[in-house]
Length: 176
Image 1 (cartoon, helix red, strand yellow):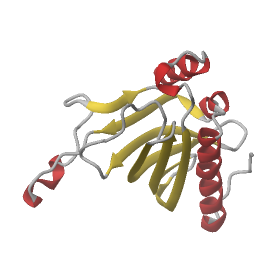
Image 2: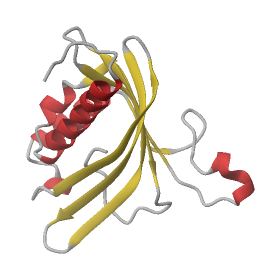
Image 3: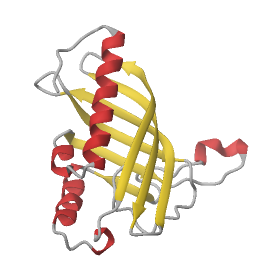
């Protein structure tokens, strides 16, 4: 869905929400090649680890790109390789396929530029695999969207700050 650029904040809010909701549908429906088309070529996709720190050290409660280990610190090229691997049907951690639901809420633009916007949102991801494996991940996302050539949006940067310091999932074969 493409819409012309707008300066109306309500319309902008709606556009951003529709982009995020469509993205959630693409991921949940395993339309991963279409999802890749919503990503900017220079994408930064990061999921730092959560640390348990004293309240005086809150600046250290997540690991940092380039300095510490992270769950993910990837670009579009590596995400495309992961999607291609899942598409083979031979990815042992996804055969049979997981059932995943993304719930996106509390979408809020925090900076609006001429052709880009920084926003925050909350995320809940529910994953069920085989009969008994269920995982729930909760967190906050910090995204940067940029206009594409058709007036729509592309995801340029995503940082997912998970609430959990220990992930109980056996693997991370799904996207946040």
